[in-house]
Length: 148
Image (cartoon, rainbow, N blue to C red):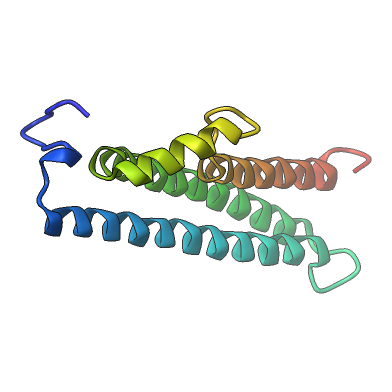
């Protein structure tokens, strides 16, 4: 990582700073997955509510509102996950510089990835929000398009 705005590379950190850097990376990864779980459960329950609606034929206004809410939440989720992913990637890059054994492990994992450079974090940050956007769009279409 080049010297940007006085930011030191991983090799320039002392042992305490390296430990804090690695701990920060673990903390942010925990937040990434906690947020993923929260949104996945929230979106799933919201989708179930839109489909079930508490009756055999829920009112169009209820389904429309829930679909719009679901679309908005999906976009917010996608934005939040991608921003957290950016921080995770920066911390990973710094840890790759600071810890040779970490770099070796990541290099070995990269060699075995099915989708090249797409890590599971990158895949999850994009895949679930996009899938829910598609599902919300389909539900909205199926409910409001003539003949749906």
